[in-house]
Length: 207
Length: 399
Image 1 (cartoon, rainbow over the protein chains, first blue to last red):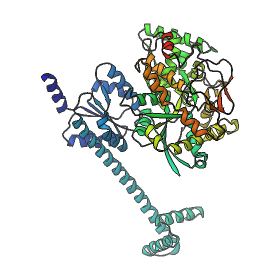
Image 2 (image 1 turned 60 degrees about the vertical axis):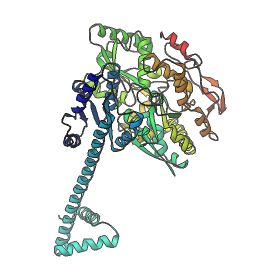
Image 3 (image 1 turned 180 degrees about the horizontal axis):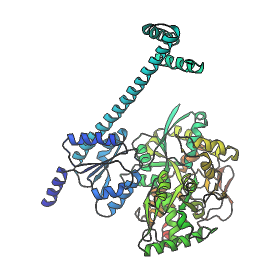
C-alpha cells in the first residue's frame, strides 16, 4: 500500500504530457504554457503518420489533442486496446469531470489520461491547456486582422495614387475625396478604393 | 425559427440533413439547420455530448455504445430517424484482388479472401484491415463476413481504425491491405488505383443498419415538437433523393467543399447504386447498395439495434446480458418517428421490431398509414435474427 502511494507521487512529480496538434505553432504555445507552470516532461507530436506507435513508445500520462485532429478515432481505438492490455488510458471522464471536459471541448481540446492520476492535478493541467489554446486562437484572430488591415492600407494607397495622377491633386486631397465618397455611399474607404481600382483596371487605366 | 446544429462526417449518407438545409425543406418546417463538419467520429460524438451540436449524423453502434456507457460514462442518446441502410464497400488492394477470381459473388469472394488471410497469418504477415470505428456497422459487417467465410477476425487478421478520408492514402502507403468504408471513399480509392471493391455490405446483409440521427435524450425531452419538425424535413429530403432526375443536383450539392468535398461524379455512383469496382471498368448496377429512404428505411426498427448489440457481444465489445439488449433497443425510438410523421405521406410501420434477414422476395407488411413493401432482407449466409430470441441467435453463431 505504502509503496503504491510512493509510486503514484513519483509519477505525479514528473507528469509526462504529449501534445498532439497538426499545427506546430499551436502545439508549441501550449507546451510553453505547461513548461512555465513547471511541467518539464512535454512532448510535441505534429505528424499524423505513425502517431499510435509514437505514443506507445512514449507512454505519456496525459495526452492533449486538438478536437479537430483527424487522428482521434485511431488514437481512441489504440487506447481501447491498451485498456484491455496493461495501461489503462481514457478520455478524462468521470461524472465529476464533466464540467472541465465540457470547457475543454468548447475550447477545442480533447484530453486523455492514464488511470490513477489525481484528478485535481489533471484538472489544473487541462485548465492551463484551455487557456493557452484560447490565447492561441486570439493571437490568430489578431494576426488575420492585422493582415487584412495591411492589405486595406495598400489598397487605399493605390487608389490615392490613381486619383493623384488622374485628377492632378495632392495626397491629402485624394484621401479626402475617397473619404467623402465612402461617407456619401455608406461604404468603407477600403471598399471604395477597391471599387475604384477595379473600375480603373476594367476601363484600361494606366495604359 | 428554431435552430439545430447538426454534426456530420464527409460521407454520402450525410445527405438528408444537407438536402433539408440547402433545398429549403427545413425552412418549410420552421427549422433552421447549421451543419458542423468534423474529421473524426470521436469529435462528432463529443460535440453532441457536450452541447456544441444538437444532433448528429452518427454510426448506429456508436450511438448505442455512448448511451450504454461502453467506452466512457453513459450519456443517454435517442435515435428517432435512420439516415440510410448500407452504402459501405469492402475495398482491398489491387495486388490482393488479383488473387481472387473475377465475377465472384460475396460468398466466393469471402472464401477466397479468407484463404489468403490464413496464408498471410501462417507466413507471420497478417492482413491489416481498416474500419472507421470500433463501434461501427463497418466493423461488425466486415467481421460477420470474415467469420462466416472461415476467417477469425481477431486472430487471422488485424483490424485497425482509419478515418474515411485517409483510407486511400493508407492503401497506397501499404499501411492497410483493405478497408470497409462508406462512400465516396471506396470510389476515391478505385479512381486512384489504390483499391478494388471486392464486395459491399449490401451483399453481406441486404438491409444492413447504418447511420442514424442521434440526439441527447435531454434535448428531445425539452424540444420534442421542434425535433419532430426536423424529422419531417428529413422525410421530405428523403423523397427528393429517391427521384432519379434529382441525383445530379444532389451529387453536385454534396460535392461542395463544405460538405463531402469530392468529385460530383464519384458521389453520384452511390446515389445511383452504380459502382465502378475496379479502375477503368464500366460501372456495375449494385441493387440496393445504399437505401436512403424507400421501404421505410428511415424507420428505427428496435430489432436493428438489437442485432448490433448481438454483434457487440459476439466480438467482446459489450457484456452478454438480456438487459443490454433491452437497453440498446431503447435507444431507437420508433414512437417519436411515428408521432412526427402523423399527417404526412410517410409509410408508418405498425410493428417496432421485425425478424432481421427473413425476407426473400418483397412482401407487404403491416402499417399504420401508407402501403409498406419491404424489399429482400437477407444475410448472405442465410442466418436469421429473431429479436424475441437474441441469446439463441448468439448460440447459433457459436458463442
